[in-house]
Image (cartoon, rainbow, N blue to C red; front, top):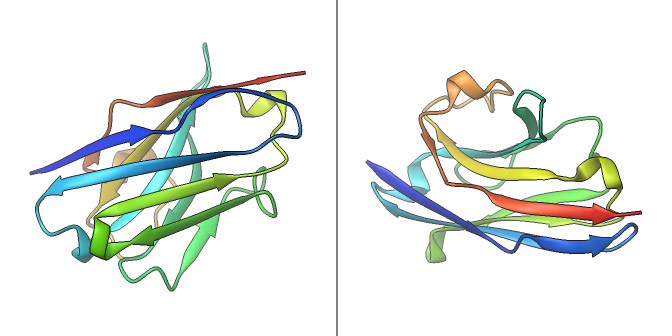
Length: 124
């Protein structure tokens, strides 16, 4: 079992930055790829970014490429999402998740464990 806790969300003006953290406990964190998803009201949960076990391979949704950076610190059992140049359309609950797949999937059903989410609100 893996427990995930997100933090770092909040209210920011357009063009601003936030850094989300995802603290993991339970099974050996370092063995698994992880990802970030987000869900806005009335919309489906969508892929944001994913990172492999070592941090050497990443994948991003087109909508966040060049603005967001995913990273992880296995010594601290923590994954991060640095979000720059935020836009109002980035407003959503952001979730971290763990997958057993090594190929950085972009669909939510391929992730086995989820955090409770952290709200990100970007004002125009």
